[in-house]
Image 1: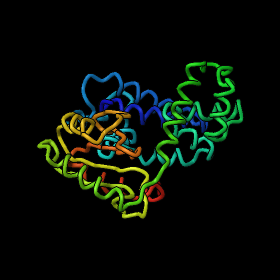
Image 2 (image 1 turned 90 degrees about the horizontal axis):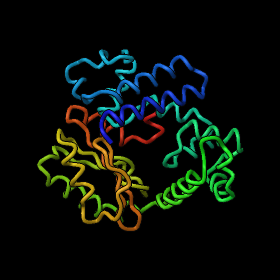
Image 3 (image 1 turned 45 degrees about the vertical axis):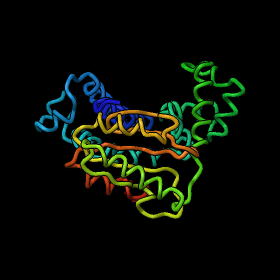
Image 4 (image 1 turned 90 degrees about the vertical axis):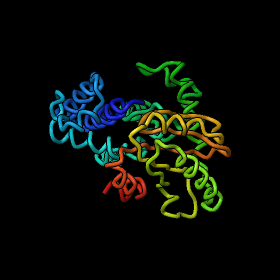
Amino acid sequence: MSVNARVAEVLYEIGEILTIKGDRFRSRAFNVAAQRVTALTENTDEIRARGKLQEIPGVGKSIAGIIEEVLDTGGSRQLEELRESLPRGVRELMELEGVGPKTAMRLQRELGIVSIDDLEAAAKAQRLRGLKGLGEKSEENLLRAIEEHRMMQGRFLLGAVLPVIDDLVSYMSESEASLEVEVAGSARRRRDTVGDIDLLVASNEAEDVVKRFVSMPPVIRVLSEGVTKSTVVLEKNLQVDLRVIPPEGYGAALQYFTGSKEHNVK
């Protein structure tokens, strides 16, 4: 996923959730900004370097600030807060690949689906294809997303993954494109167990870093590959998320992705 695609993805999702909440004015502003970013022929990080983000049509001071946060950290506090404000069942459904806030709310309102188990039962019973815009292929994709989601739910003892983390940091540090490499998340906080590994790399050569990451010998499957975030699966279904951060935003990103979800949304 390109830098602009990631920025647009965040803006679109904020717009979707605002639509659900009835804030159509702000929703439209975010959707317009997302469309403008998608249509850009220049990367937003280059535009930012020139101090010209607010010259992008539809991008004012507030949205420019969110774009800068995405460029620095790969995420958005405002988006996290909006996600947390949604009903619990909707948030659970949004954990699945391919399920955004609008789809999750439709599933809840029109079919009474409030959990991943409910969704699985509905898809297997072929109930989803009765909804406009969903069909047999949608049911197949959702069942596959549910299976992959469940595979990723296992947790690992920190002591068991520390050698893996050391190997990952060492391997990524060998690349000249990697300026700094650190583990973040629950592993950095030294929790007793971890669900996955968050790896942050400071670099001005994101493509080279990502290429090295997805081609590591321990990788058994690549789930996503983008210039700001990539995800792979190692043996025993241990998931590793890589975020490539510009050097100037690395310190803030390390703090952001090391804090717990509860800490980050405050």
